[in-house]
Length: 200
Image 1: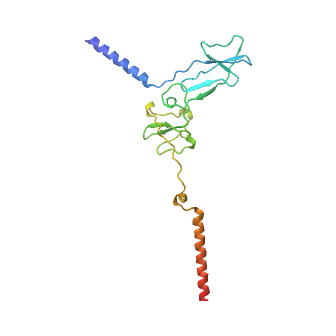
Image 2: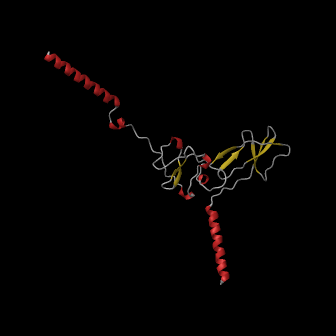
């Protein structure tokens, strides 16, 4: 009986451990990329990227593949180069707790009341709906992440269109209003002058 209890406890612990690992968002890095420049007969290894970023060599370089199995040619000089990396604008890479490289989260917005996160097309030129906020100026880009779970993302956020001017909504152009006032003043002046003429 006691052995069955111990077995059940072990099973429960294993299940909890697996659930914890599933709940943790992770990104496995790729092996380094082997790149060559045939014109200069040079070879280098660059970061292969992960699920949140991809890296490639500058112009004039060719990717031979991931190492291993790719390797530098024996007669090429081994050098170091600066790769060109692209961060991915995806929910996974902008959710707190993920491992690996930080994603492109500049257009991410957060609603703390609804506990939701979302992407907009261009946050700098977007008038956000009420309660949605973009990255504060004092927060670094690498620290701007969705503070909630991955399932708290939504794509139901649209920029608010600018409201039309009030004088346009009234149906009377501003020039027409000003012109009408001027005509009224001129008419009152003419009446006053005519009255003085008659009394005189």
